[in-house]
Length: 164
Image (cartoon, rainbow, N blue to C red):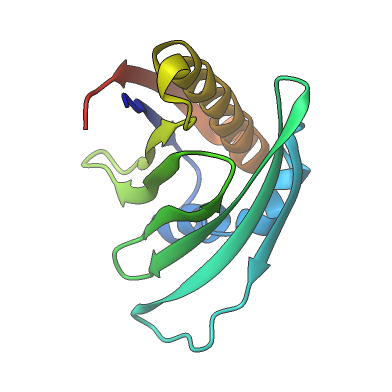
C-alpha cells in the first residue's frame, strides 16, 4: 500500500504559540470551522498534568458523498506543543500524524500539520489516497482560517505518495 503524505504549514501573527496550541489541540471545536466535519467527540483523559496526556477522539467527516468515520488516540505534549495521533479503529486503512506549534526566529508562530493517510483499498490506493490527502488538506486549511482568520500570513501545502 502507498499512503499519501500531507503537510500543511501555516505562519501566524498576532497570537502566541500557547494560544495557537490551545486552539489547535481543541479538536471538538473543529466542526465550528470545517463544513466537512459531521461530528467530533473528544473523550477526556483519565489524568492530565503539565507534561501532557493521552485522550481518544471519534471523528465523522463527509467524504465523497458519504461519511468517513474513525477513532484515534491523541497524545498531547503540552510543553512540546504537539499532538500526535494514530487511528485505532475506523474506515481508513491507516491514518496517523501530528500537529506541532513553534515560535519562529522573527516572532511569528508556525503551525504544522503532517499526516499519512491510506484509504485501505490496496487495488485503488494509488488513485484514492491522493484524493483523501487533498480532502484532508482542504479541511486543515479551513481549520486554520476558522481558528485564526486575519492572523494567517501564509499557508503552504505539500503532499506526496510514499512507500511504507
